[in-house]
Structures are given as structure tokens and as C-alpha cells.
Length: 128
Image (cartoon, rainbow, N blue to C red; front, side, top):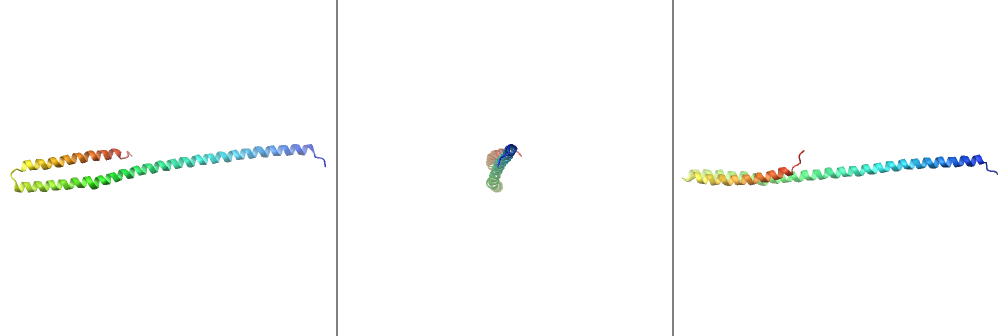
């Protein structure tokens, strides 16, 4: 059994072609895998950014709810008390102007404090 040199040459060419083809195929598979990996990382980063933004908005809304629940209700209660005191003073006292001025001054101070708090909370709110 003699081996034909043409057959060995053909075998060498087939091996070279298969090797190059498989190398090229492996390169494209590796490239697609890396691209997919990069896309997954980017999408996870995007999801994390969205979750962080959502958490900030939720926190700010909770702050706003707390402000509404505590501060605005307190302002309404104090205003009602001041109006009731004013009515009582108008009925019972001759020194109404001084009592009204004191009640209004107290409400004005409370409103100023609550306004400053509202501005602080509004600064934390997202622009868009």
C-alpha cells in the first residue's frame, strides 16, 4: 500500500481549511458572546439606574406625604385655633387688636417655617 503524495497534499489542504474555518467560526462565536455579555451588563446598569431613580422619587413622594400629613394639617389646625381665639377675643375683650396681632404673628411665623421646609423638599424633587 503505497500512499499517494496527492492524497497527503489534499489531506493537508483539508486540515488547513478546516482549521481556518473552525478558528474563524470560534472567533465569531466568541465575538457574539462578548457582545451579548456587554449588552447584559449595560442593561443591568440601566435597570439599576432606573431603580435608583425610582427609589429617589418614592422617597421624595414620602417626604411630600409626610409634609402634607404633618405640616399642612398643623397649619390648618393652628389657623383654626387662631380664628377661634380671634372670635373669642372679639366677643369677650376690649383689647382685640393686640390679641389678633399676636395670633396672626404666631400663624405667620409657623407659615414661614413651613414654607422654608416646603422649599427644601421641593429642591429635592426631580426636575422632570
